[in-house]
Image (tube, rainbow, N blue to C red; front, side):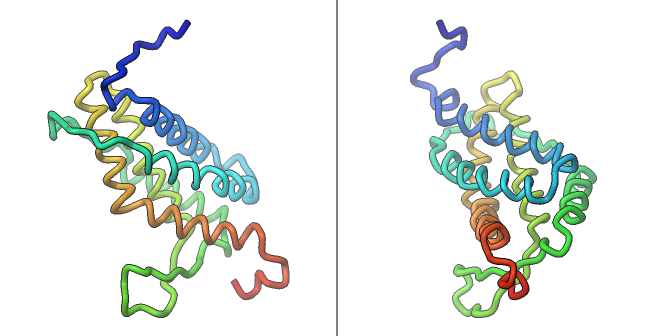
Length: 181
C-alpha cells in the first residue's frame, strides 16, 4: 500500500511534477559529486539525463500560483562559481563549442558557448526548483513548478538542447574528426 497522500485533483502533487522533481534531484546530486568522476563518465551521464530533463519539464502542468511571494532562490553566486570552475577544469579543452541561435534571424555564424556554463546554469535552475518544492507550504511548491516551467521556456531549455548537441559530437565523433570540433 502506498503511504504517500494522494491529491488526485491537485496538479502540484501530480505524477508529472514528482517525476520531474526526481530527475532534477538526480541531476543535481550527480553534479555535486562530479569531481569524483572521470570526464567521460560525466559526459555519458549528461548525454542520458538532458533529454529526460527536457521531456519531464515539458510535461509539467500549468500551475496557478496563489502567493507570488512564496518563492526563494538558493544557489548562491559563490556556489555557482565553484560548480562552474570545477566543471570547466574537468572539461578542459572540450568546454568550448559553437552553436547557432535560430531565434536571431540575422545570425549566420556560430556563437561561442561553454559546456561548464550551460551545465551550471541548468543546475542552478533545477536546484532552486528542488529546494523550493521541498518547503512545507503548498504555495512554495506551486511557485517551484511554475518557475521551473517558465525558466525552461525562457532560459534553460535552449541550453539543454545546445549542450546535448555538443555532447553528442564529443561522444560520437571519430578521433580524426575531433580536431575540427
